[in-house]
Figure (cartoon, one colour):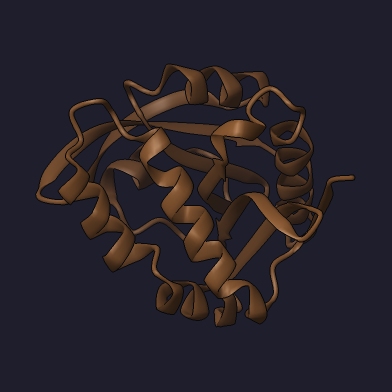
Length: 175
């Protein structure tokens, strides 16, 4: 049975392993293995998750089955610092859906929907009126999923992976 729960401080290592297994799935085909490795090292390593889990302005939810993390989301409760995002979104107070990743073998198993529902409910419970996210413009699967969950394209921004900037759509939805 799949359980959706808030991540605990003891989940940092498992989250880093999960990030290593899932981050590359969201990258465009031209992303190099070196760029993915650098992002994992600099942003999604165990030490980073220790910091994220201790941050009161972040919330990480996990989907777990039999003690194995299948997916996770991360909410960042703060006004966006990126000028393109600030200009694109129109609902305040807002929360960023900063991460939303699932293991490839869980795709199509009905894990993503409940994880997203719980994530948006948690955002609403913390007082957010809207949620936004950035998604690579070439990630058609994710764009379809977010659209099914009420997100619409409201702008664009750039996202650095390794030494290359990628083009992301900015999506937003009311909560």
